[in-house]
Length: 182
Image (cartoon, rainbow, N blue to C red; front, side, top):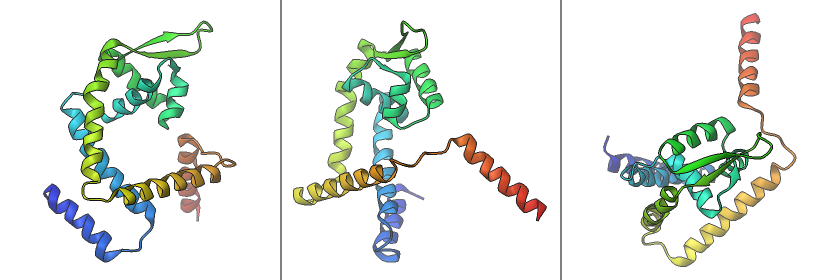
């Protein structure tokens, strides 16, 4: 299946089959398309999308701990550790242990800082392509709706705790055992 026919299929689905489906599904498909478009451009510069996420955060202010970086990126600490190890090997960052020997701080190298000039225009290009032909007022309204959704969902989860992957795996195992016993 070509990319154009894949996109046509998704658009037909949204316009014809489920024109009033949940917003979450539409946002997910839009996110996938945006990520794919950026991944292709980043790959041309030998940068993975995962590294892009951490670079963006560090360009705003490096010297964060690995844990802070995990929280900012919205990923688990082992994922951050693996990505940072690779980024250090590529010469984008350096890690430094804190005085307490527990915290590990992450700093951009000159090579990591220089990537910003090459990579940020790629993300801007993807955004411009995504909104091509869309009125400025519609873009502003979309941003307002998405920001409100993010805020509402963040407020909703303030008193809830995300279970760990390990805990979720145990739930699945308990269900399988219970089904076998029945």
